Length: 165
Image (cartoon, rainbow, N blue to C red):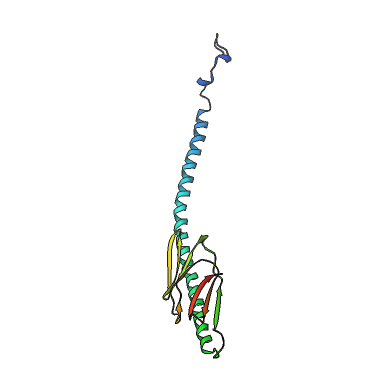
């Protein structure tokens, strides 16, 4: 059932339409899958960012409360050292070391201490936690990087100081 004058070699691939629907279907399936996957990734990205922001704010508050508790402990110890200090002895000194994390949710942070509060701050996301303290002694205003810090009382200046370890 061949036509006369035509051989199989005359057929061109350009005019061959067999299996076109299978190929088109496969390409469409891949394209739809890619669109759906990108939509899921974009949608989840926003959720992750908001959760990270909440975690950073919560952790800043917890670390700030830890720093305030240790500042107030150094204050109590320093006042006790002043009261129990024998006359003629050298100036009393007190040091309280606090092992705070270097990073919060994978981000660096800074600590600022003054006479009223301890303030922790990050830049990405921009978040601030300010925790008031009730130290009776004067606190020297200072800024340190997040991580291990030391609250130190110097009897000669009668001030609490904060330094990085």
